[in-house]
Length: 354
Image (cartoon, rainbow, N blue to C red; front, side):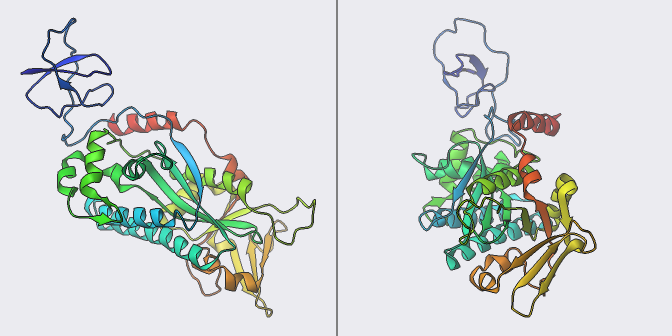
């Protein structure tokens, strides 16, 4: 047996000869202790970072970022998504989960592709993080801090936005026993898994994924989109009547279920979303029962349809597109953002471990 000390906490522990132990309080690595402890040894057991399951480390409040997609940062998101897709094959269990992740990540990449084809539309990346992912932070730290992300696309002359490609970082789902196995040969851009998982172990960032986060990220993205969207290009001075009214998307079945369960009170599902092509080439989008006086109608100019690939690729605005669609009223979606995310983190952890 040997003694170890966590310098930040000051506690001294007893353990076997293993220099990779982690403090059970702050989850930092402990160091060998050669002196005489000035107080009783801590009764808590040291944590083994290579244990099958590592308890959740102390984390701060989940934070959100709404990052405009640009020619300068698109490579970061392309490389990040590509690497996460590769990692997911080794981390996720079951063909259904793997396929679901691949489809979500594919939707994310499709939004990036549409951005390259259209300079007039606005595209953002909505991100839930455990810390900064830009500025003076390393690319490895940035990758590890990302918990969940998705794209948000709109256009000044379109009164809805589209959320596409929401996925959770598979790094957050890694069991510690898999780290050595995964620290192999995957390299995308300047990041490789061997170094990535070394950082993961060193920084004790092996937290469990935060549950029920996707709805919050959708709500945050809706709020930011309403604030940061450009006004219509032909709007008259002083005209403040135009505002984004809906979020329209073609979600995967699981996300459709989540959105309907969470946002059903202000959601319109596929059966009541109607698309008609007019002789002029314009599209008429009707949201709601056509016989209902509250049915909302949006006319989409044919020039926009030709210019903005995302309208067909992501939003599914093609009369022959049979993908299920959902439209959420943007204001209620934005208002559903819960500011107490840190409390949710704790409750999610308790639910998972007890």
